[in-house]
Image (cartoon, rainbow, N blue to C red; front, top):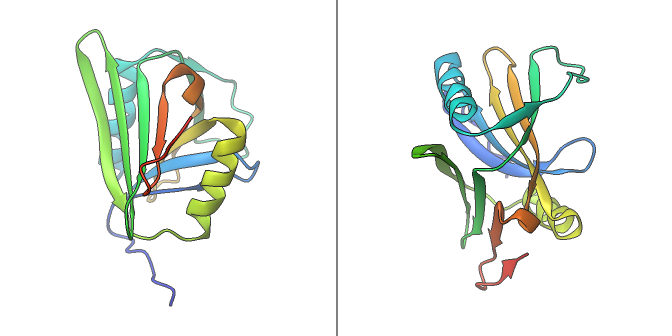
Length: 154
């Protein structure tokens, strides 16, 4: 049975971008939540901004230069997601539960095992504004994926 996502709530998820990159996403219903989180991230960690080559002119693209960690933890019927940004005593982030483990989750796992990095996408559903942070890598201890059987993917 397909469940429709509520359009008046924030939510998190995992999946793939159109280019096949594994993605962890946080979607904000209200612009104020989106602006608050993106400003906190920009004020906490060092980011290098890319020239916007996206088809979406309201999409900001960055590479993290450190201070960011992402946890993806498989649970029995859900996925726990956590972003933590830390730098010189400043801390911000989010956590949430994706309530299903569908095709997007299994595609995410398959690509993550190949590429060993993810993209973080934060969006505002009202305005279609987006923030992408590319190249968050397990090789730099920035990503940890824990499977239900307690296996950790490196």
